[in-house]
Amino acid sequence: MGKGILLIVSGPSGCGKGTVLKHVLAKGGYRYSVSATTRPPREGEVHGVHYFFVDKSLFEEYLKDGKILEYTVYCDNYYGTPREFVEACLEDGMNVVLEIETEGAANVKRLMPHALSVFIAPPSMELLEARLRGRGTEDEETIQKRLRRAREEMLLAPTYDITIVNEEGAPDKAAELIAAAVESKKNA
Ligand code: 5GP
Image 1 (cartoon, rainbow, N blue to C red):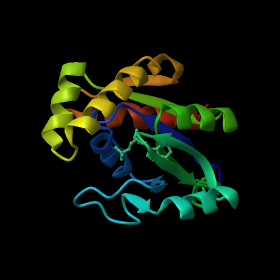
Image 2: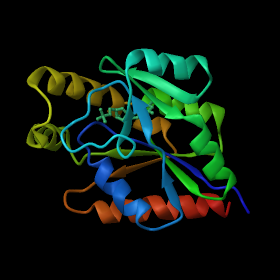
Image 3: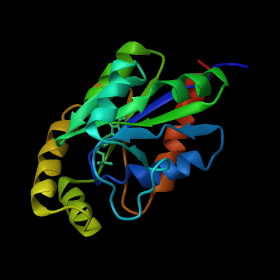
């Protein structure tokens, strides 16, 4: 079977990429790579579904054992992609979704140049801030940290293969555009 496409998706915290990706995954033929992180779970997040929530020493053991394909430190916590799952799925011909931040995205693109990198942008920074606050899951200091980081990340959008604006109320449209780009990459 042909190899799957590695789909790298980044976008600032609060841009709605989770919802967009739900629509992409619903299309079938995609697997979501569950990352490991040392950040504490948010309400409703499930170990093994949203993240593998691990402590710092276990994460560092994974790193030492080569079990992490790429990783970063984001707002004081480790986040990393488990290697084995990604490699096995691609080999099976599945497309694999990596929802990762900009530094990790650049590292993966260097390692795997055939990957498709997509940046999801919010319609505006004002809307991003409103979404981040509306989520009500972070304290003010964390919101400020994430907004600072978001501004830096937006500057990197041009380094991705494509940028898609997640228009308010239309995550399905953004998902359509992403799936179309994956298909054209597959047939290239
Ligand atoms: P959050 O705490 O909001 O779930 O994630 C914070 C940021 O870390 C997001 O931009 C998310 O895409 C990124 N992220 C999640 N998992 C990984 C990973 O395995 N590697 C990298 N480099 N970034 C990740």
